[in-house]
Amino acid sequence: MTESLYQHMQQLLPGQELPPAAALAPFLETRSVAKDEVLLEEGMPCERIYFVNTGCLYLYYTDRDKKEVIHFALENWWLTDYKTFATTAPAVYALAALEAGEISSMSRRQYEAVQAQYPLLGVYFNKIHERAYGAALLKQKTYATLSKADFYGYFRRTYPAVLQRIPPGIFASYMGVTPEALLALEANFVS
Image (tube, rainbow, N blue to C red; front, side):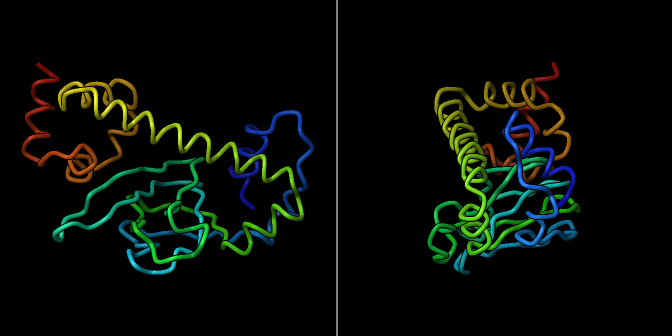
């Protein structure tokens, strides 16, 4: 168990007595990931959930041989194909590393076992899923109600550090615009 993950649990469960990190360690696998490493391919069984210790992951699907990016996970975020993780069904989305970094992960079996053994972890994961769902809904509303220029401005003002870490082509996909359209939005934002 990494220190960053344990601190994240403490942060989301303030005042709660967590199991010792050593007791939770057998439920997790931690490893380095390379930039562009694919952790989950569309159509493969979705068997793991990932915590970002360092680096950045992203979730996407492929449409007409083009990546359509729908979500990012930076440090202290969990990410998986939530649509299929519960059943280990074939993944609807793919998941890859945008940057080299370090991740911790759990298989579905480990995820269920840790919550059965330590029910407080069920509260922790519920908080994680509430935050993820809330973020997805906010993106949906923001994306639906703002023009592309306003959405770009909102994202740039709200998440400037994130935007610096995302390559333009990947961010253009996330916004649903071409790389050329993103360049024009950037130029208009600066002027």
